[in-house]
Amino acid sequence: SSSSEAEVAEEDWRIAKLFGVADKATPEEFAALLGEVGTKNAVVHGSMMLDPLVARSHFVVMALLDADDGSLAECVEARKDLLKAAVAAGGAGAGAALVSAMESWVCTEVAVGHARETAITSFDK
Image (tube, rainbow, N blue to C red; front, side, top):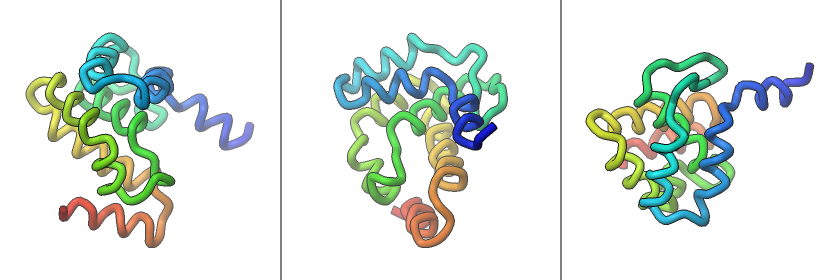
């Protein structure tokens, strides 16, 4: 099997659903949909994730951030309202979980080299 097939198999269906509405939904609608899709049987990086905050934050980051759209800071700035709504609706610990998910995204999704170093230094801002 090809690596692209493996990547598709590893991605949780909720990421595609959230990605599909991200450009159309208001922040409140996005946060509501995030709550509706839930985290039961969540797949994060190809493995079952039982921690709902980690799974939820992973879905948000994977749906909203794209390394091809610019630096981490630029991606966060472009999606700031949706990210803030997701954290506000996520309850205690949602902000820390989102930062952890962003760090994981930088380390797994952003290409090694200058782009990754730039993304990592974005955490300083």
